Length: 132
Image (tube, rainbow, N blue to C red; front, side, top):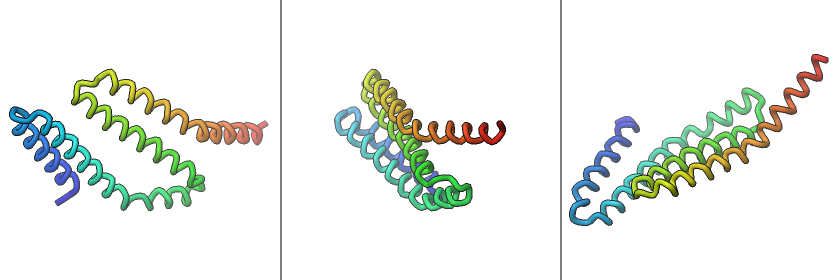
């Protein structure tokens, strides 16, 4: 069975279990939903871990500094985790808190992007120096 079907199966099983329990024990339905979400994320992370080597190969093939690739992966990871967590907060009716979390996540990504932006500006400056 492919991983996407496993993920879909886990999501649907979690949803059905939460719906069945929601009328009698709403607090247990919330726990089931969170547990299912955590299982989904852990499953996806496990699948992703096997692919991390490709990023090292890309860095060596392109001559990019491995730190840049690592920073880009951190930025993507922050985006996914913040979006996932904000979704859980929205499920609990905490929309305002979810919006603030997304805003803070964007600030963290911006902070991580500063060294990359500096490298790009230095590269552009060097290239312009070659032309002049």
